[in-house]
Image (cartoon, rainbow over all chains, first blue to last red; front, side, top):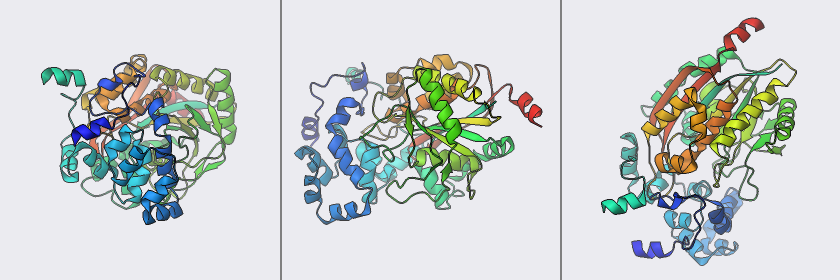
Amino acid sequence: MAAKKKAARPSKGRREPIKGFDDVPGTTLFDMQRARVGYHLNMFCMSLMKAENRAEFKADEAAYLRKFPMTDEQRDAVLKRDWNRMIWNGGNVYFLSKLFSSDGLSFQYVAAEMTGLTQEQYAEMMLKGGRSIAGNRSKSEQMKRG
Amino acid sequence: MARIIASVNCSHVPAIGAAWDQGKTQTPYWAPIFKGFDFSKKWIADLKPDVVILVYNDHASAFSLEIIPTFALGCAAEFPPADEGWGPRPVPVVKGHPELASHIAQSVILDEFDLTVVNKMAVDHGLTVPLSLMFGQPKEWPCKVIPLPVNVVVFPPPTGNRCYNFGKAIRKAVESYPEDLRVVIFGTGGMSHQLQGPRAGLINSKFDKSFLDNLVKNPKKVAKIPFIEYVREAGSEAIELVMWLISRGALHDDVREVYRFYHVPSSNTALGHLILENKTRKALARKRK
């Protein structure tokens, strides 16, 4: 499952805009290149700001998605509500919020899902001061530690 | 002549707006957060600013990916609250100050800060949540508000140093406006938070506290913090903190820290709040009386 998700990342060959960005673990920076790749995915999300579009989307999600020139990978991630995969394919969380709001989901619910926690576990982590920075700074550091 | 007399910094977490609007301010989760603004509400009620310049970022509400202005300035007479997908917040329409806003636009563009003039714009939680925190739930907002949205959604946002210098240009613009106006500048967003990916939920209180200390005493040092440090240390969405440098640049180098509040968590975010005054503020208030 994890390997499959990894293969879906379009970041191969991507030029890092600022040195070190790709070394931050569990983080996909929404830079100009990703904004370009994710343009139609994000504009689809924007379209859900209108009630009539939400109704049309809910009636037949796949048909509605075909109206936007997105990649099949992006469409599939939307249909499966795979938030991390949407982000790897150029989605930005503020745009995705239009999608999960129309699903009746909160920022905290979706954040929890992206981290692989239940909403209760995630809320508990936040109450205890949030995710610690220790061990979460750098991929290369994590690799060294093993 | 117009003067910027103080700055207010605070996070603009959307859930805070929802808590206000749903009457949840006294629940055990939210009560400490709203209590943290009791002093601030009194402070600003006493200060009675004529105009607030409110630096914030739009969250895919007024601006989508169609147009991405790095710095924009709201020059309209009014700005309606945005519908962010669950209906507009039940807050008053924001009344602008088109004369001062146009003056600022002209002045800063001549100073080489080429901002985008916006004459029609809805304002989202980034702008209305700080107003609610500072002014509560009035029928009308008690002063004019000039929205100043900054792109911090698509990387790269403006650098901290650029923001700091932009603040200085805003100060110069305000001080060259002939009418006697008392202006407060808000710099909002932050503090540490990450809303995306497997690292979501990151909080770094040590980074936040050091940011607050240095913003007061050594803003030039804060202006040099590179993007990668915000992202690595405080989370991808902590980059909003560059906006605090705009308000800081608009004040004098030497300021008085009037109030500070810090609380974790507010939804996914470390909530930070800071009030700074120029040291000339008291003398100015006396003169006005």
